[in-house]
Amino acid sequence: MDNENKSTNGSKKMMWIAVVVIVILLVAGYFVFGKSKTTNLPITSPSVATVNGVDIPKATYDTQLAAAIASYKTQGTDVTTNPSQLAQVKEQVLDTLINNELLSQEVKAAGITASSTQVDTQYQAMVTQEGGATQLAADLAKNNMTDAQLRANITQQLAEQTYLLQHIDVNSITTNNDEIAQFYAQYSASQKAASSTIAIPTLKVLSAQIKQQIISNKQQAAITSIISGLRAKATIATSTSI
Image (tube, rainbow, N blue to C red; front, side, top):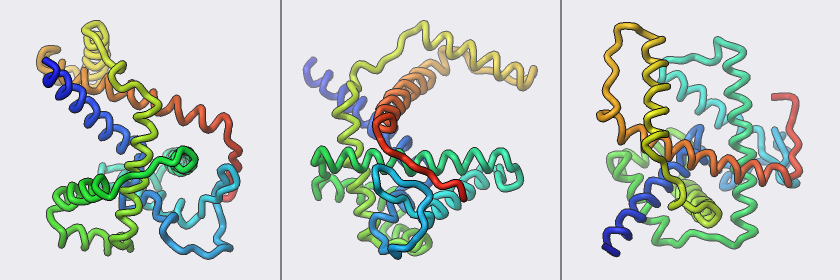
């Protein structure tokens, strides 16, 4: 039974880490996140925000924004044709950069680092995900990024995951049948409103997916709460020129 509990807890932690990565990266992934930390930008480079005295370069913002716009386009939405949507994406990108900087500062203050073994493991996972070392190298080149920069970004991500895991009780984030049923009812209603002829899978079919989604939502809410706390005590100034 102890081994089964350990296995279950390990699976929950792995799922949590995956969620953390999604939330932290949000816009562009390892290829873009934190690139300014490893790129020698000119000292006179304009900034889009200052977080506790640390500038976020406009060059970083522009890269993230371009990646976000491209991501939406792959999903069939060109936000550049809709001023309201574009403004929302710009705000999301800026908020993400500010949140990442706040987390980075907290991680540094706490003295949290990732081991070379952890970094190598994540790096090899990316090699597999990209379809091999050759394809990964090609993707890095396409994003004007070096292997060293990628490893630096992975190191930062792992450290931030550790920080979040230290501040959130993962095992306390659960759901129950009532929440699952309520989620399913809302989902069904929205689907029927969109199309009266759509075939909606039964609760039994969707139960496991709904459970995972609810837990994911709660995890994201927990992260948002931590970020909100960091923002509340931080000194943040943003530019009006973006």
